[in-house]
Length: 85
Image (cartoon, rainbow, N blue to C red):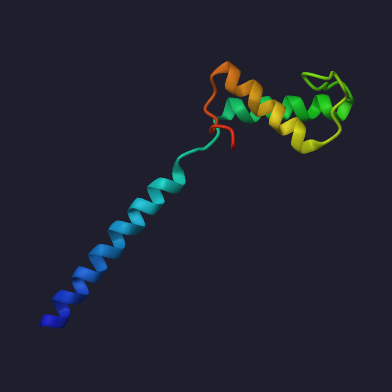
């Protein structure tokens, strides 16, 4: 009987952990509006119209275009994680 009780406790613990992990995975890091902002910046970059903020040079790197899009989304108040330091 002692083994059955131990088995039940083990099952209960794992299911609680699984539920917590499932809840964590469902939360969004980026809001849909932030994704749309990044899409528009990428389109501008591909069209050759996206310029860098300070120097005014044409942006050719996709990663830089994404960073600009996320920055614009932050300014508008969209849900976006803080910048990495």
